[in-house]
Amino acid sequence: MRQLVLTALFFIALITVSPTHALSRGDQLPPTIAKQLALDPNKITLVDFFASWCVSCRIELPEINKLSKQLSHAQLDFVGVEVDEDPLLAAEFLQEMALDFRVVGDQSQQVIGAFAPIGMPALYYIKDNKILGVRYGAIPHIDQVIKNDLQQLGLIL
Amino acid sequence: MKHLIWPIMLITATSGSISAQSISMSLAPALSSDVSSQVVVKRFSTKGRQITAPVTIVASSAASLPDLLPLNALSTPQTATVSPAGRWLNHGFSWINSGLGVKDVKPWQKATLAEPAMTGGVAPTLTKFATKIFISKEATLGGNGVAGGGCGCK
Image (cartoon, rainbow over all chains, first blue to last red; front, side, top):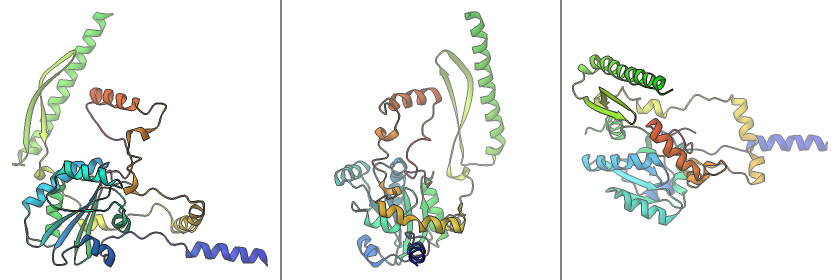
């Protein structure tokens, strides 16, 4: 009897444990995360997650920054999310990069924890708090890739 | 011994210049249709040997890039490398990790792992010097570091 109970408990534990859910294309942002990012629901927002230790982020960020200045579209917005745990490192990195778009500090890593990307840097296209597309990892010519993606999403540049 | 080494070096240098020329020639027809691509001709020499033949370096432009994967294709779930039963067991047994306090390092939590001192080995500091030699000898950089720290892999 005892063995039966233990076996049942074992299988219950197996069934009830669920994997962590990462936000992907088509998902709606949780209200708390949407509030933290303060996104404009009427615009397509490029949310870029980056950190100072991420080499690809260092390469891509100047290109994205340049693009954010080039594409001054009424229906487009750029938001960066700095995910360094150390606030001093984050501040130094932001000073070094001198980004022109809005950057949200996520030193507690709550926001990126909710998105749970599989790699860094992570770029999300969001409109009306809904994820329209995702790009992970180092991508050469990211500016051209973003332009193509935006056109694919129906934004006439 | 010296008189044996010089011809070998000469052959090496010559073969290098020939291969460089053949590369530039093979690229030329493909690039001729692409108006926006740029071709930079650069002469270079290395210590101990002179390569006089011009080497064509193709400056990659947006127009010369192959068609990018559409956004939808990238967002679709990747093909599973583990069977459904394996995944179920993997997630099912994760309570052992949580019970022991073992946690996965997420891709955004790799700041410490990305530090040069974390490369391991007998003397991690020496890696810096080894990398310097590797860069100067191979004229290339990268391919090492933390997975998920920019490469996009898991």
